[in-house]
Amino acid sequence: MANALPTSDMTVAEILEAWPESVEVFQDYKMACIGCVMAPFDTMVDVARTYEVELSTLMEALHGAVQLTERLSGSASSRKNVGSTKSDQ
Image (cartoon, rainbow, N blue to C red; front, side, top):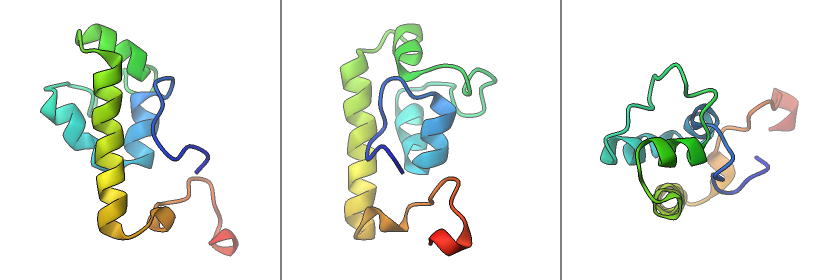
């Protein structure tokens, strides 16, 4: 994966696909992003504006969830490689 952490210009769908653990952050903030038809289009900037949440606070929460999961799993190498083939793994 090119990005070690989610970025504010990524869409909700991209983040949910790459970091499933991010679901909890959206739920904690009571955001309806999971399953939303706008998830493939809305970036985190859009989400922060829509829900009136500081972007930096939201991104810190996402980064914290990702980093915690990586620490608990022992490494990021277990993360699904989007677009990889069996020979790449």
